[in-house]
Image (cartoon, rainbow, N blue to C red; front, side, top):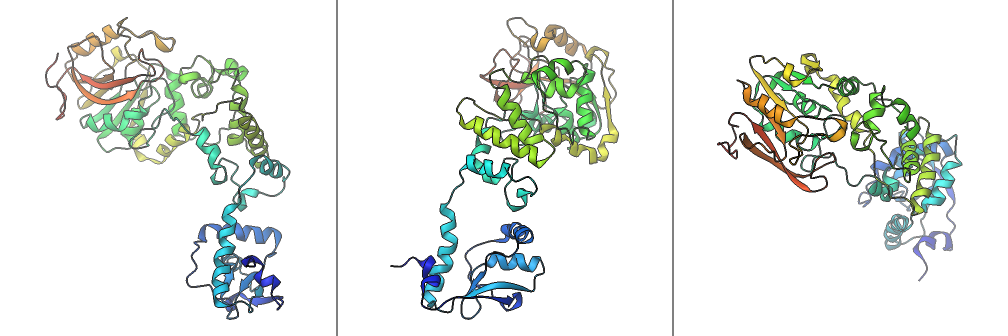
Amino acid sequence: MMDIQYIASQSGQANNITMMSVNDIIPYANNPRNNKDAVNKVAASIREFGFKQAIVVDKNNVIIAGHTRLLAAKKLKMREVPVVVADDLTAEQVKAYRLADNKTNEFSVWDMDRLGDELADITDIDMAEFGFDLDFGDDEDSAVEVVEKDDPFADIETGNRYGVPYQGNKSRIADILISVLPSGRRLVDLFGGGGAITHCALLSDKWQYFLYNDINPMITGLFMDAVHGKYHDERRVITRADFDALKDTDAYVKYIWSFGNNGTGYLWGKDIEEIKCTACHALLDETLQDRRSAYVKFIKMLKSGKYDNNRMEIEALERIQVLERLEVLERLEVSNISYIDYEYQDGDIVYCDIPYEQSSKKKCDDYGVTFDSQAFYEWVKAQPYQVFFSSYEISDNSFYKLKIKEIQSLIGASTNGQKATEYLYSNMPIQDDDSEDLPF
């Protein structure tokens, strides 16, 4: 049997191309293809290259092949388009040709190396208009699967992310903590860190005012700069040398580009630094040509088998910039005091995201800082108002506690890499049906 694709061209009757008014061409009422997402890209192609592929219609001017091209032509306000009238086909052949013309396109795949080489040679035409998304979009699904897996900051249940990447970030359980903490006049985030709790609280309606405090002014500055859009156009790719030179003065460099966001060591080891920076250039470089070149280089490096790649969370900064549009920011106070200098105000709900205690030492000396856990516990007990704090299991069993969630502990805790249960502790009973109402 002769291939359906060649029936029209191989039949005894020639199918000449003619110009036809777009208003005379009739879409097939039972067209099984949904082509609306392709119209803009086809229109861009026609605008750039001209109408180079004729629409095929039957003897009644009903489209056999070319529904998207007709919609694109109408979008471009074209009056006439080139048409082939396949009036030599039977009704069954028309149906078969219509399906075959669409189906056969599904069996071709991209050779990513060759595609990258071809795209790299095109400098004056924006290929993104035609669907080539060089920022790891739909045409590179396999690459996306490689670079986006194992996201340590994504909340498993809601997918929400809060605050800037920072040591001990509470983004994964911020929604739960905010739902458990009682309403009041002001939420006091006394160990604010990267601002995950403050960020989540600002998006709720439980408090009228907010105090975001951390003793480290660089991290509160980073959070507030991100809120106000400073990093919206941030495109720097920081090398190891850049990190060493800038980490003491630039909060973005110090925390976004450090291992575990601890502010001390560079994000990547020397053996993978090159491919990681290349991937960042493919995502962040300003011009399409620069991103394209970096992308081609990245794919070649990735396919070499030399590297194991996973994604860096620079875009977390962009997620908190939506706060810039919220009126509630006018009710946000920022401070950099020690917890012992905090002065309670009537209606305050005080929450502390303390460094995780190393139970064998009864203190914390992770992240290059020393935190006296026992002194903090004594401070909490001495307060006449309720204080909440979260942690894994602690050495002091005199607090009320509520199980929050079992999670995989992150860098900095003594249980790093293992499953651990996060608890909310307090010096007074926690009002929740599942709480343990009596201290141990």
